[in-house]
Amino acid sequence: MAYQYYQLKNGIRIVHRQIAGQISHCGLMVDTGSRDEQEQENGMAHFIEHMIFKGTQKRKAYHIISRIENVGGELNAYTSKEETCIYASFLSPYYDRSLEIFADVAFHSTFPEKEIEKEKDVVLDEINSYQDNPAELILDDFEDLLFDGHPLGRNILGDQSHVEAFTKKDIFRFIKRNYDTRKMVISSVGQIDFEKLVRLVRKYFEDIPENKKEVIRPAFENYTPSRKVIQKQSYLSHCLTGNIAFSINHPQKMSLLLLNNLLGGPAMNSRLNLGIREKYGFAYTIESTVQTYSDTGFFGVYLGTDAKHVDKSLVLVKLELDKLRKQKLGTLQLTRAKQQFKGQIALNDELPLNEMLEVAKAFLYKESVNDSETIFRLIDAITAEDILEVASVVFEPSSQSTLIYNNK
Image (cartoon, rainbow, N blue to C red):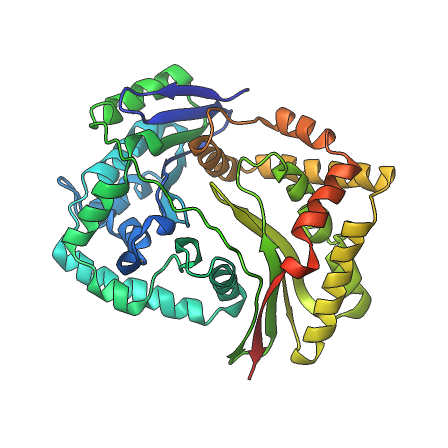
């Protein structure tokens, strides 16, 4: 079934796909993340994500958590560079309960002073635990390297000095400045009739006052490639090399995603896995990634390896990138790459929670969402020349930045 859409008078939009099944998935996504923070607010969007579950005008923290979990569901949230999302998975009869709790925590949280001080310690522990995972930390540090001096480069979690200074007044100021009802999406993939879903959303969200905010995100400009080596106490050395790339609605985005999947996607027959891990045994983990934002993005290759293999591994990565820049894919190679990519998209669609979250993000930035059949047609239309053109830009050697964590 195709996606269905509706918009409330306050600007909040709904996107839904009805599926059969006992479990449904729904979320409220807001087009506000860490890049919307002022420098002294670093970590605020993520901190608010924690605090919305700590008390509302009619509920304490325990009752918020129990509202969904008492009926066997799961309530969760996350913050990214550009979005904040509250979402839940639950037995399909509990749409009413789930939407009501979304509205309560999103628009009626009170942010008790006592809970603010307690949650600061929780977030600081989260920041410290992140330092113990270099394979994840390097991605944030790499974005800081790419987007040097820009809000996109800041760590989503913030740092100790900023988090410790947050006040209740700061929280309300950030929300008032950034939370625009026209930039909110309620996304649903589940067993409910669309008309009934709209009635429930209107019941809990239609009376929310429209909150128009003309916030203009500063564009990232003047990218300068660089190389940085950091000494880290860990067994492996970790490396990330890459370049800025395309935005979420860029016309060449699909070609880059196909290229990325061919080069270093999850399949064991990716070029990086075969050419470096399988052939030489240099890296237990090697993969490539693409991240798209509203106005920019980046491509990167990550690998974890022994310190003595770092330089050799990076040379081999460069060779694989150069092949794709200089050698056009043959008809059979391109056909196989497309079929594998489409198969992985279809497998992902078997996970409705992932679909619901992806659809929410896509709908924030355009008027409708592509279903899998439309996505497949876009993939089928990609030519070998398209792949070569994208590779020549994104894999240009002089444009690559590299970050290395060397083990002490």
